[in-house]
Amino acid sequence: MKNIADTAYLVAMYRALETERPDSLFKDKYAALLAGSKGAMLVEILGEKEKITNAIALRTRLIDEQIEKLVQSQKIDTVLNLAAGLDTRPYRLDLPNSLHWIEVDFPDIIVEKEQKLQNIIPVCSLERIKLDITDTHLRKNLFSDISKNAKQVLVISEGFLSYLPEIEVAAIASDIKSQSKFIWWLFELESAETLENYDNIYTRKIFDQYFASGNRTLLFAPKQGANFFKQYGWQVTESISAWKESRRLKRDIKITRLLEPLMNLFAKANWEKLQQQGSIILLRNSKV
Image: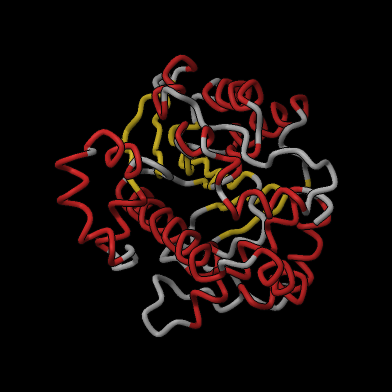
């Protein structure tokens, strides 16, 4: 992998692997096409295929559920997917055809995605924009342009924030909040414990080796958790523990069921921290 954008191929491949399961948490019939040989190769290089597939599948399912619930219960007319990668939600979710879905990502990703999906019709109105979301000037102009035609916007940034330094996340949080029509923001948030134990996580160490920069890929995991965003004008509406939801969706590790009573008795604090790792966060703009 030459840059962080290559993670799009990885995520697509893990979604393809999940789709093959008879008990899959979702069906993404275009994931394998988008991942291609590059995604398949990267998955083999990283190893721990089942473990990471479960993690990506769980995150995908939980965000799917939140999107469908919000679109059905709120007056959302626009979804803005930042760093959309090779995501196919506009093709596979239960969405109204009147919904305006906007994907933003690097030009190379957008061009390849458009080529591979050119003959496939999305379930809603779909627009793709080639743009580096970390470019402050371009980002602000984009948000302003979207606000002119939208009534209520849901912003999605899935796993994107984890790859950014805190100062960049703060800037994006402020820019999104400044748009009164940008009501909701949905994403995955890693815990501070995950960041502290980063160097001891085998998969992360291997993952980092395949980036030309040689730097850590996991950067953002605030000690305040989702409360980090309150100082930038956001209210925490939901914080969904992926660990806890894995039991509901039958993707938890069976041994944890046996250990839970003992952990609650002898190491309750550590057990609670473990359950907080990897949460799906839904924020609401306090300006509204």
